[in-house]
Image 1 (tube, rainbow, N blue to C red):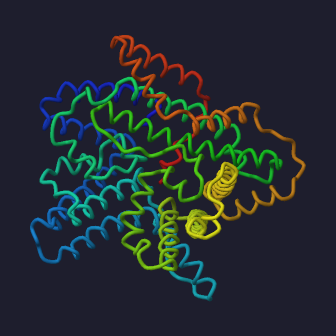
Image 2: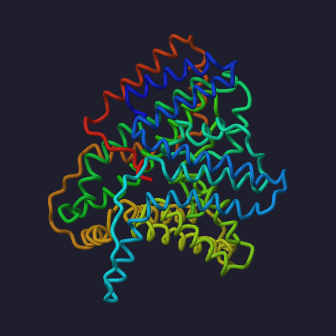
Image 3: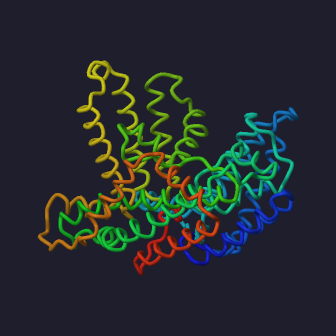
Length: 472
């Protein structure tokens, strides 16, 4: 079941009615929300519900044991076992075949044919996000940031809550579980602002991202040797806009849907293509993942506490593992390494004497922006390509034009410009327009929402690209 569909609109409408009808009976409401979330996930493959139950069981039991309030022995060992179990599930489904392939390649290189075979299992939807939620819960309980939950329903609902389940944002347990403790107040959430957030997400995904994907990005990246240099250049910018429009759209819809059900999610994007430096980019792009990697990987590795050399090591390791999290492919590892090295350079530059001397004038800021944006766009080439051979073919086409006719559709520059416009819109624009919608009668609000939804559906191309982050 996908967000931008009639099926999900009906599913959410039912969920909305049930949740607020049962709001005063909080225990029953949570059970209903849990059943709805399980049904949402089962619509892809009901067999993988076992993963949700297994992950929730590990989190629940390990959380009870490692809670510092009980001062049990071997808490750290229990924590490591819990994290290892969660990572083991992820590694089996997502990385085992990759590592088998690397071992076979290495063996062949040294003249040893290893008797290994691929498992070829189906990758469960949301396996990475599910794992990150589970790990953050038991680590936060171990650190004393929150008390272990005594409710299996709360833990399973936290793991499986359908707005964030498939592609984030990554919601920490200490942000979500306290919200389950009592009935919600509809007055705490702007209906108009969140409807506009959802509609904006639908437009970014169904119009901007889908047209760019189907009309230009997917064909060019499938076989870059068949396209002109101009097409290749435009496709890189188009993909930069597509992946932002696609992923931020999902999290916008998720945040808006959760808010309409009475639950607050953290912000996940903050106009990332305005970033001045790679460090600034990662404070704006996929913010919940950046914070997760910082708190559960970079800081435990030592962070910046042991000198510049160890800090550089920790940054590089964090981004390498962040790249690997996205997929079992050398292209993702290289993408992560590129960002890791860029973060090291960015940090060294900002701590240097020359930076202190020249400051940040308007010209310097413009230069920072230009370099940052184009580095990010070039790195996307590795992220989007399915193999290093694909990257090589793409770069070759950029260097030596093959003389092919330009096929970039006329709407592509318009959609790229429209996507770029989202990076400079005032932050309070949606709140202001949402307040106007809140002032209208409920019938007007409902009519506006459904009319706008169908208008977006009508503008969307007949061919649709799947959400990019579903594969992660």
